[in-house]
Image (cartoon, rainbow, N blue to C red; front, top):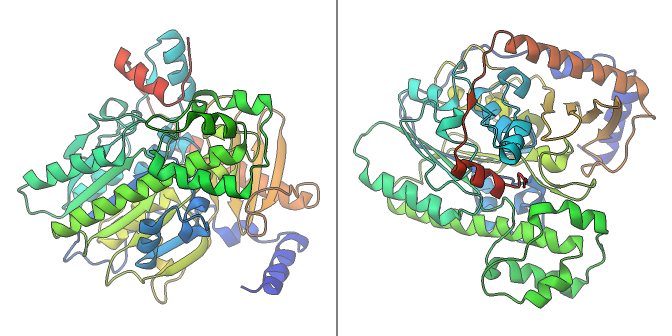
Length: 491
């Protein structure tokens, strides 16, 4: 779309009283449809790569020029890239529960950061368990004839919290935010080398290389520090901003020039470099995984899914880390699907899509009837010739601690609601992807309509949750230690 056409379209949506926006995005439609025309024969290996805390805009294929992600960028040229994929929540537990179940966080009820925090501070054994009332992505794939296996480095995505549902093999024995990608790779490769069954394979691999505390080796970090020193640092952090870094405020380990780090650590550019070094580290291990799977004859014909559970804030809106806001720093994630000979190579999709759509999409690809209770929709019409697609809205919720924030996306716009004050912010995320210009006072009628959409979605989510009984998982001392390492602080 040209800039002039985009302006005409945007003006029509806003000034034209936004009539029909609810119908345009189909926000009241939640799919229960069976897949159409999906091939059941010759089902390939499916390799699902989840990179924890990976924000889309720091990848080359999403426009970043820093050279962080050559392996991911190459994957994008072989498949379909979704430019506007939205996570359902800004932190891991509710987001993964939504990804696995295809429903929004209020509907599945896994929103217990406060419980986890109190478990660390007070040693109260209370963390919400992902309910088995939902058919998970792994269960759908297993029902479709797949052997399912997961290798998970995040301490929250574990068996005792309900996330092993549907997996024939589930390994989180190495779960820690300090686990490098080579550990995940070794675990999956060792398992593959002993596997004997001939059923098609669904692999879920959950990496933590990008997650805080940003401790990539010097070979990944030092070139980025060289660049910022050459350009010159300019964004000096206030004492408040330094304090908010919390568990992130620590020097990198390994052989390094600590004086250099001490000098740079009071600048925001330094922490951006620390974060991006983690992306480079993951990309390095991803390339190793690809090479190893190719040597085993697994990669070339496989369907690859690459995404993230959430992004990461780098103090653009006064937040570090993730989970404390529903700005796009935390919600805009990469989504790449690659299936040689079936999905178009190099195709880019600008439409809003949601992580809750992934389960339906994979079911559609392999002729598996999706679960009846999903709120997602198959994305296949967006990349299938002649496919008919009704635009969708996207909803997000579930900050970790503090007053609840919620977001609604529709037709190029995003409404952000602060529930404690009822303050609403409005952004045009096409023209203003950094969410720097709040247009709420300029377009009050649009704000009103999108607030109605948001409230309606929340009501539907709450109705789905009616009668859902959630369990609490006890925490061992080791699990509390792992949770602390993720940034859950306490005495």
